[in-house]
Image (cartoon, rainbow, N blue to C red; front, side, top):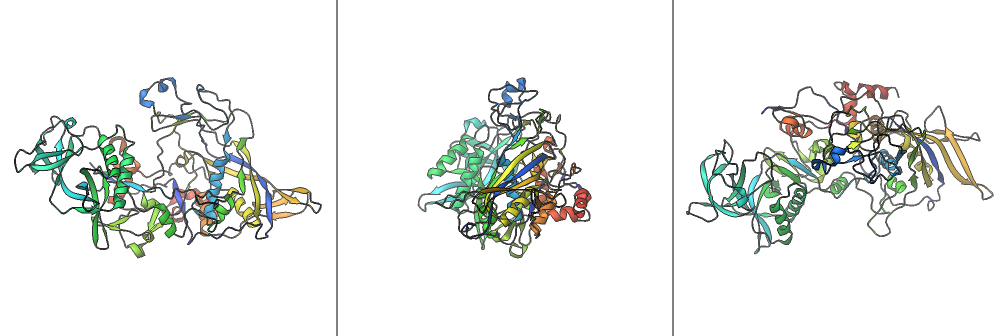
Length: 638
């Protein structure tokens, strides 16, 4: 089987990162009232224009667009299809060929996008990140075999190193004695005769004979390991202890192993052995469990780590996002009023600590369609599989601090490799790339390319150039906060757009926000409430003119930073960009339908070249990067 990353192949990853500053701008929260600072209460009247198709699901019916034959297909029992979001409850309703409901864009959807821009532009925390979620990544590194057990005397988990011997479970296969694995239980003790020759060069030996009781003294004691089901599988394993000294397993490694077993819980069909292991590990009542593991080196000490039920499996990293953010400038989410970033001071946050939550001083209404003509939607389409974000791809999500970690071709959140040796990394050895934003581009046509499956959804997207109106209300915010809020809404730049909804990597969800009116409330000398209404200055985005007087307001954020400059570059809307935006694809000959899947690129990249994600500036300004020429030209016109 041949495999390669094609030389000269060029792609722009659908997302990139706006860099973090040296440190998050956090300080004790003091209300403007306590500071005796002038504040503003009022609202922006806004228009939202869809620049590419947009989709936000109405989840009241997850089979809303299923055809009759798909509803009755048992193979599609977990599939889903959605209409666009509206106030209409679609539960139990039939498929609508010509939907008669009016689309709604939830205010929460707009708020999330605007807050992300505000945090990136004004040095806020990463409030929307799941900071305590474990990071993991599938690895193709071959692991060691061992038996995990609990030492009652020392009250510690230990691993007995083993040799893996292959057990033939396919009739007619020439290598090893055939056995019916249904007669054996995962982890069961057996006795075997091992072959004199290996299965293949550099591969394990095979089982020539097997019994549940020892027949001769030279028969080897071992433990059955029955892995996950996959078609055409021809061998399982017997783990045979080598007699080497057992190694102590740290509690955090056991915790990670339990978490990994929990991930396997979702697999179909479920693995009964893994279920039993989860229960036994939790109660520390285990007998002996066949496991795969790696070794990691720290301070001249080597110990077992990354236990797994499979040779090729995910690794649960011990480093948490929260720790990395703390060590990279304190960008972890705000949790108390004594340490609040500018974005959380404005948008608020919820804390588990008593009396520490902070109420938001901004509110977004739902956006409603302006022209009610009934011609809102495109024809339903089936989207390709879109997985969750994968922060485990460290070559995209992180940068190494070579001054502290040294040079290496491969690293994870926990370790780097030096040949086959894994060496532990500290949080300061890595730098988080920043905040994730998607490039704007024209979607590719998916109308007829994909069929509905349990992994692919059918949707009815909203058309381009649909105009919505909504309001953003603010209360007791300072002059500077009013300026930063406006910048997060319209970027002070008519070329930029936000991304909302689903399908962002495919080009869906580009929307432009235009501010049509600014209304502030004040109190007259007589104690009466007054509404001051401003209209945009047609000659300058960010400036306003009072509609009744000569008063002018300048809401522009004049000062520039690297982060605001990066946002303006990746947020620039250019519909001409299409074919070059793509997740990476490696070419593996003979791998069937997965021959150009994204995971192939990452596997080959680790082996061959170790490319990392270019920065936003590198994508735009490197001489050999003519693929974003249109964006480069737009930026030079500013």
